[in-house]
Length: 150
Image (cartoon, rainbow, N blue to C red; front, side):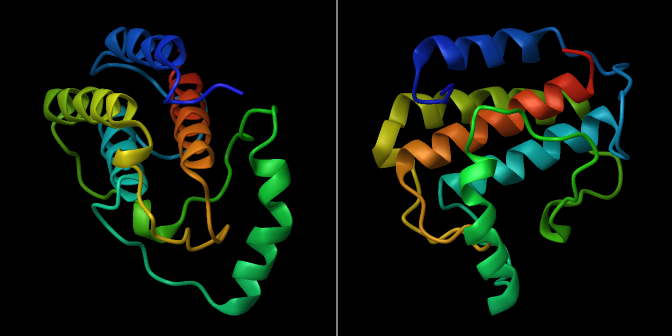
């Protein structure tokens, strides 16, 4: 499985991000490229324990545990999947600021390895190993880069 603890997988994501421009057009979804970068920053910050999304009710956590195996499988995330409201970015963040930040955060997460990963329980899936966090983040970046044609 691709993940952000694997140096070549990380380089592949960074290379794709480098090609991303402020005029990139989405292939699906509602976010513009600036919002997508800010959204990805927020997600990676969760994986590093820098923010905590709101808790879900017990029913949604149960569903999350049931879907965990499928989510962490080989298949890419599906187009137009629902975004947790915590990660919906409004406004129009600065493209270059968000791009620089996300590239820096990816390097920090990747280079930091397990020690850089949160010990917090994921609000939807429950407890995750550092490897699962790294897989989730790689798949999340891959999903959004494909959303913008990369």
